Length: 246
Image (cartoon, rainbow, N blue to C red; front, side, top):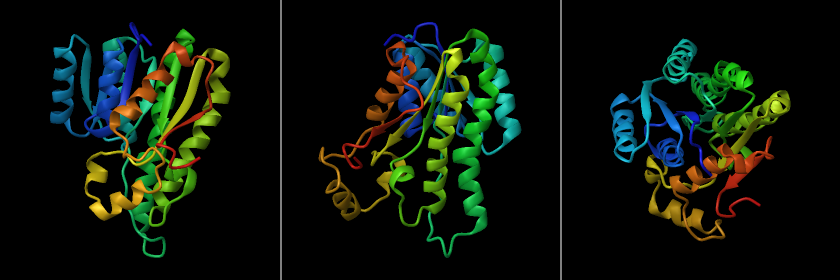
């Protein structure tokens, strides 16, 4: 699954799944533009990629800000000349029961998780159309497929990403551009590490493979969808959940 000669942009790349995706894409040969709010963590990942013989650059970006998205992608295009692969990974949670959920928490999650993905696609699509090749990969969630109490905003944003994925796949398929989604289940990240041991054990009971997933599990799926091996796959949601939903 060589990605030599390709340029990838990964949002939310400073930690967790986004960082793992950036490392895997670089390992596969892609030049990677890493974007997130934490510049220090981004720089560490860029150094790690460089130490392994890869090429990467860090871009400070808050995807909740439309003007920052436009400026960052302009900078990446100027530096690398193109963007072949877009991984819309940046996301947040603001969990609360719907009867108590503040409108600001609804808006923040939809803006970061869904609207930002649309804006990033809009900014990179010209580059992909020009060269008649592209891979757009949106990071949804098992909870966008099955719902989750206390996460009405998060589940809605992730379900929206699935609809966005299919719409974009239909729009640009004739130009040799694919658009797919990856739906992680319970993955061991900084976000899930805060859960109690009891919660984790209960979650494991619903996972046929009997283990919590790793960021690398998700990154492997992203690298596959970014490659030529997945050239006839589009509008698809690839579940990486250990059988949690089937």
